[in-house]
Amino acid sequence: MALKRSALLLLASMIVLHCVRSDPLTSAVGLQLPSGSKEKTDKILNFGKESLFLLKDNMESIDSTKLTAVMKGISSFAAFAPVVSSVINMILVFMPEENPVLNEVKKGFAEVNQKLDSLYIKISNLATDVKWHNYASVYSQDERIILNTWKKFSEFMDRRESPSPEETNQHIKAFTSFYERQGTESSVLNFYHYLTVEGMSLSENINDLLKEKFKCDVSVVGRYNLYLSSLFWKGMVLTQFYWKLTDVNTKSKEAEHVQMFKKVSEAQLSAVEFCLNNHKQYLEKDVDEIIKDHSSDEASLAAKVKRALDDKYSWYSWVVVVFDSSQSTNHKLYTEFTFTTDKFVVGISSTVKADMMDVDQVKDIARECFEDKKCEIKVTAQRCSHIWHSKDLDYGIFIPLKKYVEVTQVAYRNQFVEVPEPFHRVKCYWDGYESWISFHYSRHSSVCVTNQCQNNGKCKRLVRSNEWFCECQDGYYGDTCDKIINMTMLIMLVGPQLGPTSSLVSLVCSFLSLLLLDIKCVYFSTTVLLCVQRKITLM
Image 1 (cartoon, helix red, strand yellow):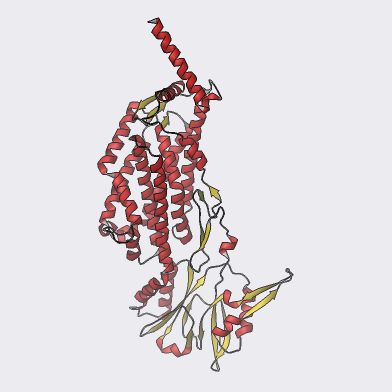
Image 2: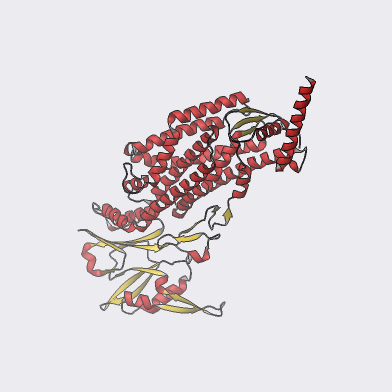
C-alpha cells in the first residue's frame, strides 16, 4: 500500500515538474504560478472590458441622421464585432466569483446591449409605418428567433454573481437546449443570406426591398442597416457561444464569421452607394409627387419642396425657385432640374455645404464680371476669375467664380420665390432689359487631401458633396483609420484550445493549475471547462 502511495506521489511530482517546464507562463516564475495565471486572467477580462466599452462608445458616436456617420457606423460594426464576440466567448468560460474587472465587463455588456436595442427603437416607427413584419414575414421570423435567443443569452449574463458549478451547468444546458429548439444557427445563416444574396433567388435581398419601399431614402436605408448589423452581430455572438459549449472547434469558424461580417458590411455600403449614385432619378419622382396636386401659392410650394429635399438628400443644401407659369418668359433658369405644371415652374439646384470663405472677394468677382453687362452666364461664368492679393501673403490667391457659386436664374422681374435667398445678386442686362442674376455659395473642399486616410485606408468623397469617409483595412478603425484593433492581444489571450486529441498530461496540467488557483470546475465537454474561482489570496 505504501509502495503504491509512493508511486502515485512520484507520478504527481513528475507531472507537476512537466507542467512547470512545459508551460511558458510557469517555467519562468516557478512556484508563482497563481500570480501569472491571475495576471493572464486579468488581461483577458480587461481586454474584454475595453473592447465592450470601445464598441459602446463607437455606437454612441453614430449620428443616424448624417450620411457619413451611418456609413462609418456600418463599417465599424464589421471592424469591432468579430473581436468583441470572441472576447465575450472567452470570458464566459472562465467566471471568477468576485472580480471587479468582470463586473465592469458585465456592465459593459449591459450597456452595449442597451445601445443595440436603441438601434431598433430608431427604426421601430418606420417598421410600424410600412407594416414591416407583414411585408417581409419570412425575414421577421428569423429576426424573432435571433432576438428570443439573445434574450436567453442576456438572462445568462444577468445571473447572480456567484453560482455554483452545478448551477452554471444548468444555465448552460438551458441555453444550448433553447438555441437548438429555436434553430438559431439556421436563422443566423438565413439572415446572412438575406443581406448578401445576389441574382436569382427565392428570397430577395433585404436591401433591395428597403430601396424599393423607402424610395432609396439613404437615411432610412442606413438606419435599417445599422439595426440589421446589430442583429447579425447578436446572431454571431450566439453561434460562437454555442459552439464553444458543444465541442465545436471554432478556430476556422470564427475566421469565417469575420469574413461573413465583412461581406455583409460591403453589401450594406453598396446599397447606400447605389442610392447615392442614383439619387437624381428618385429626386425627380419625389418632386413630381409633391407638385402634381399642389394648388397653393409659390412660397408654400417652395418651402415644402426644399424641406423634403433637405431632409432626404441631406448631403447637399437645396435651392428652390418657383414662379407662375405665365411668368416663364421673364426667367432664364440654370438649375439642375426643372419641373413644369399648368400652374407653376419649379427650378431646383444643389449647393455644396461648406464654410464661407473668401466671401467679399467672390462677391467682388461677380460684380466685376456681370454688373451692368450682358447676362451671358455660361460663357462669362466659366471665364470669370481673379487673382486676389492679400497683405499677409507674398503670393496671390486664384479665385475662379465657378468653384465658389451656383447660378440658379436670371430674372427680369421679382414675381417669384427663391429659397433660400441668394448669397449674392448682381444686376445685368438681358436683351437690353435690366435683370438680376442669383448666386448661391457652393464651394468644394479638397476633403481627401485635408483628411488623408492612414494605414492604407481609402478616402471616398460622397458624390459631389464635401462629406467623406475612410474605408479602413482590416484591423483598423477611426475617422482616418488611425486606430488599430489589438489583434495581437486577442490571439495571445485565445491561445490553443483543449480538444479530444490533447494529451492526458496536458489535461492533468490544466487541472493542477486550477487546483493551485483554488478553482472549482465542472468539465462540461471535451473542450470546455466551466470554472468558478472561489478566492484568490496570492498576489
